[in-house]
Image (cartoon, rainbow, N blue to C red):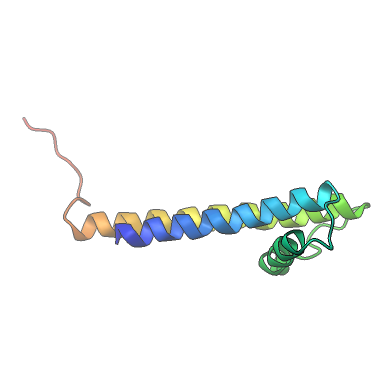
Length: 104
């Protein structure tokens, strides 16, 4: 079960990294015709899809940064909670879940 918690943390980290890199590439106006930039931006758009137009502000860069930044934050929080639950379940299964009572 600890391996599952580590896997959840790794996947969460990769998802957040892709979104953040896509934001940075868009904000600095990286060449969208470059295959790497295009692929990262497409992956970021797909991952942040459910958060499209949550905020509606003037300026495409700020709009994208706010909406995709919210997506990255939500993925980070939810992934962290899921990893913590998986780790806690693993420890309980091994017998480490109870409270420690001080020796008298």
